[in-house]
Image (cartoon, rainbow, N blue to C red; front, side):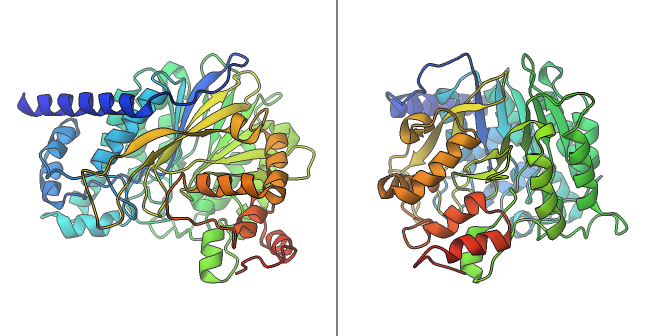
Length: 471
């Protein structure tokens, strides 16, 4: 009973604090009837932040985890250079509820588990054999489903698989694995609300993908497992005779062409197509996100007019940005990059509160909410004030009518021509973090990657930018 009171008091305090901190946050301007969707990515939940609690967590049912976290030493939120501890998760959920208490959809675009999950478990858990490890992974996934589901009891959830989400290791998602079966089981009640995704449990367990509707709309969500398309993918824990990448491409092609005319469709997947600019600049060589086959086929499938894709949602980079799939074609598709909750790469935690036209599937507008005041790595300071606030709203910041391909193409031109707009974009790219990754020295590399998704096209674009930092 006492632990329950601790949990309640903590949640109430967090809610009151966020209400005060939000103040008069900017709200999107009025427009046609739309749905409010929360877009979240890269939570990277870290249950090892207080290593003294790991054995207790391993021995406690998931329903009791929140109470266990309250028994830990008092500390501030996860700082830059770390993944999201329970305090940051709690803060983010509270901020989301304040921003939009009753969203129609909560989309969580992969990477639920912290980086280095296995090694950290082995270092902190007294019993750390394979069975204990898998049980702890399962509990962590179930805990996130429990917390998100409790925060938004009426929302439809759209989760996807990220490259850190497996028993096996990073970029090693295995179709038909016990991990996928457990993930499917604990998230099915949230993804199937309103009968939205009746095949969710079976399809996710088999391959990590599924198709979902959105109750009250004509929209279809095609949620793909892009981990198997990654240039880093290694199927060492799967069937050595299978070809998961090609199987996923075949499934995507079929999913994008249902019987009859395709309704407005979103493609949701963790890893976007194109160039990993940060890795390219650091490694001094162009680094595509996908292997050769998927790099060519995924954009072509998404860009096909008959697929009627109105939005492509991805995460993975932890930054706030966009891409245009099929730029210059007859049916370009806007790709929104959702920022992360985890601040491990120096970005501030952030999420989107989006307004979606349920008839056309267009993202009409979106407000980015970000957390300021995080401590530097290794310097936690509970006295440092942290504040979630509305960072910017697309329509007012960029004067866009909608976050469609036309609007993002116009923004792409404006970023090249207007240094003031570009300065704002560079700041918001890392959600207001003092640790900049896009600068005036390297912005052309990121700018070219917005529309040029192949290595050759990206290099050609970059070569035309005088003085630009190049790999």
